[in-house]
Image 1: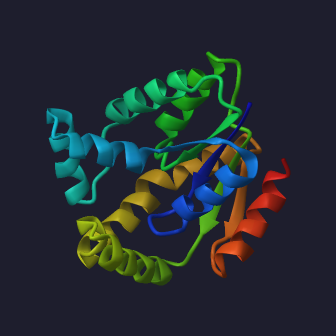
Image 2: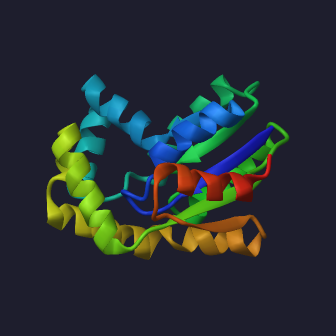
Length: 189
């Protein structure tokens, strides 16, 4: 089983590149953003709590996300491998993911980090917000908060995987195919 974490700030292209990785390698995609949005859409109490946090640009608690991630992995434990998109977002989540994957005798093979300047992230998110209608991508104050949260809370995950020798930074500017070419060189599957 081959598993990778696709990592980067909001708007860096994780979802777009994940789609291409799924097509090329046949990995099972776990987008915590998609899982969280589905929970919100369900109208459940948990969904309403998640909606409130996301609307402020804040992170959903580790416990909530980990519960959803574990259920997804266990449901798909015979998969060829996984792409973790939007998870882990904290060092505690990365440690938890390592422990949980060891229960099914696998681990994260590589963490791909898409590096994109803040100004480009803002442009991409505002554009995506106009097309998708996502409220969190239409408010520049929320976008700036999301970028700050990424830098302060999520970026240390990169250091965690660097220490494990599993992190690979990818220049995230250029065409989708140029960026994908850089990723496939790093993955070397």
